[in-house]
Image 1 (cartoon, helix red, strand yellow):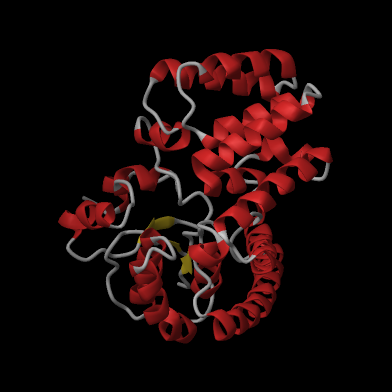
Image 2: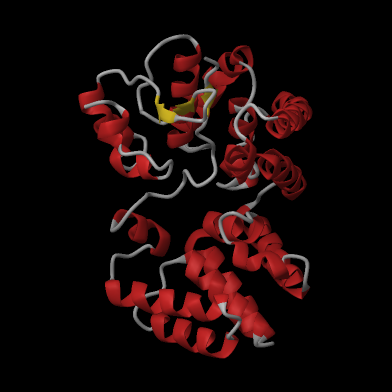
Length: 318
């Protein structure tokens, strides 16, 4: 049977399940704070900007360590036409965690509640703040924008994979057409990334920020084994120098090993067969997999499995 790699970048920066998920998402385990911001989110989803804003403001008297919640508060303020306050919250979010603030704004899957305003006047506020932050950090803004475009074109068609598999099946004409589109985009993106690497070396976070510092890795991960092996030493050095996330190097390590018929080290790769059935690829020294995962900033494999609807023990017949 043909085997498909199923793990993607989408969502992998988060930890999974309570309380680790909440700690990462909201940057705290304070349950009072978490309940408050989740109430505010309900108001936001209902389009009730005033109670949304008031509830976020009350939550921030408890703590304000979550860039995601602060960006959502900015959205509430914008919807209430309190534009100065919206800008203030965007700025605050970039100060808390710039990578999360950008992820919230640019990535539809991370925060779909922003979909209706990404092309509105709020876009001007967000990009004004982001541009100022980039200048403060000494980032190459033109290169960063190029990488944002590459990242977006990589992820957009992949965001449709799950729904098409559920609707039509893994080997359906619809899926074959989507894979063809994905492969064409990957080819174009790889050529762009190789040109960037030729000019700049690995485009890491000191050059383009922490989020886009992983875009070259993403495109290479979606390339052929020969390309992955060609650039692996470069990315290994980038991860060592904190120019890209060590967790992402772990994903690439596992993908290369499975493609070569070896066992993966970190348990990052979920595969599916021609029927769409998912399972973890074989894991070396499985008893210590969580220790290795922790060393590169990944959460427990038991929690990771839940992303794919898997029970870890059952998936490995343990």
